[in-house]
Image (tube, rainbow, N blue to C red):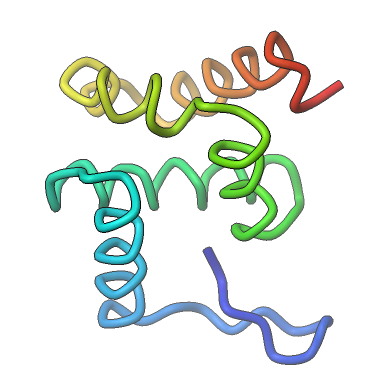
Length: 102
């Protein structure tokens, strides 16, 4: 996810910010550090594809559905071996099935 300065100019996250975000995700979902980094990767990739914020994608995957805890985390071993495009389109398909995206 990119941090935002105002509403117009994305400020790229540095490694320490990504680590902190992964720790936050991991504490909320009881994930391993590897699963947390992967979850952040998925959120950022979806945000890029959907042209929205990481916060919005996180809400879609956790508050409006159970995709993060019910799919991404339990299937980490298989999913993390796939390419970015496959993961993004797989998650978008799940989001549509669960009514999170139209």
